[in-house]
Amino acid sequence: MITSDFSNLKIAGIAAAVPTKCVRAHDYDELFGEKTVSKNISSAGMEQTYHASEAQTSSDLAYAAAKNLMEKMDIDPSSIGVLIFVAGYLDYQVPPTACVLHSRLGLSTDCMAFDTDLGCSGYVYGLQMLCATLQTSSAKRGLLLTGDITSKVVSPLDKSRLLFGDGGSATLVEKCEAEVPFHFGMKTDGSRFKSIIVPAGAYRNINASRERTEWADGNIRSDYNLFMDGMEVFKFTMTDVPGLATEFMEHYGHSVDDFDSFIFHQPNLFILKHLMKKLNIPEEKMPISLDRYGNTSVCAIPITICDAYHGKSGEKKLFIYGFGVGLSWACASIAIDASHVYPIEHTDDYFKDGSVSHG
Image (cartoon, rainbow, N blue to C red; front, side, top):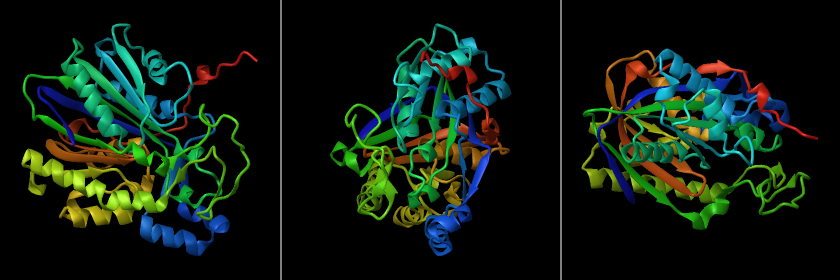
């Protein structure tokens, strides 16, 4: 476990956004069969998700969350010194999507902006990077933006479509005099990189066929669609994931009683129930958002925070945990002021000037 410790920082605000298009699980009854869909709802827990429109990208959803956060908190764009965008599916090969967001938000040139390509663990990794950057630079404020549009990558004939939703988030971190210290614990096992993968679409398999065929797991997809090795991912969540949480708790001397909530990545209900039992977390301390938003990958943690804490007040101590693609997994103990956690926004807006073609 790689650990990181930060003091004199605070999470000043969190906002999230999802598309307006709501897709209910039973909309797939005709395609997959009512029995299969009902069984999935019972075990995985996803009753509905939100899917981006054809024109929307991950950055559009992150932008909506950031714009909402900055307006509600009356943030001067020139005060932002760092912008980190975490997403699995970016807008372009070049330039970095963070630079596009930097422009759209009207940030100063006295700001560093960069992308990080990560999925389910990405919010915790991104928060660690933002905290580290703030503590080692002259910047006083930074934005962590996340976005996910997995619905565009999963084959329309793959039953895992029932699991995934799209979303975006924005988290503002500031330097301060004295606040609760943040602690992080992080791990990676790149030997299992094939466990969650889109095999083609970049530069490794540039001549892959786009024809969809039936794969060994019975789903129909092409190499340009998301593939998950169900058994390998299941073993990972049953063993490695609770293992890091236990190691982290022991290292920092934490107990379940120290936290108001445990905000976990939202893969499916069965896995979350297993982790609750394995780690002795009371059900009332683990908010669930996947029934209404699905697995939103890098956005699952901030969406769950916004879903659970908007409209509330007071400082809350949270244990956050992301795990998945890479394989990578990371947890952290943080604090938030619930009065600056905002309701989830619904949007179908997109960046109309983002379409560039010289053909």
